[in-house]
Image (tube, rainbow, N blue to C red; front, side, top):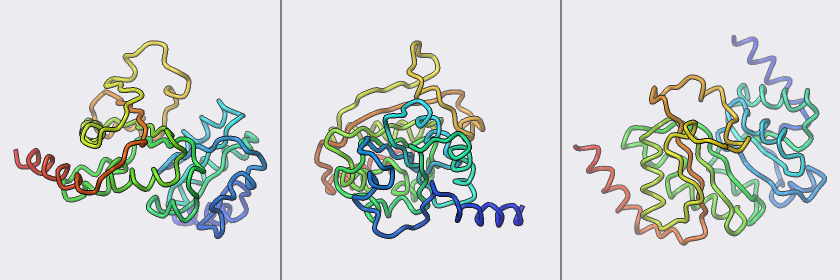
Length: 234
């Protein structure tokens, strides 16, 4: 397995659709893609199934899968290259470094697909829908840019709904049991490797879409913490 990883890391260095901790990318993504099409991010993309799937569906848009694990990115990047998806790329970096790579308004949408729900109360700030991260997304998203969350974790789903309510964000869609819905768009039926594992064993997939146009006061972070501390104690 170690040898396989080494081979993949070496290949990543040669992939034209993979950028690993690049310099001077802020404001330059349209030059990279050689067009002015909207840019969508898949955060903690893992093997990049969503970035690739969206790239297949929407030739008129650009997609960037972001993850710190090069071994995971390799799969999506290889698939995109094999299929000739010139609108799909991958960025290797940490999520909390997004502002090092994207400038204000450079991103139109963000997808968060089956992230680690960080179930322990002490790790609440590591949840990718915590206000700490939402403020970061707000700094790179266009006005009324949409954040999408797909998760099989009821805890993360409930937490995110609480954040949306507390900070008075605008919900675009709320599906508590996604696959019981009819007439789903093609983008909502894309499945990732981590979805197939059903780690939460909830037999449900939850979906939320919301905007970050509202101000996110840091003073409310303590209210959020207190709310879930109380739940953790009960």
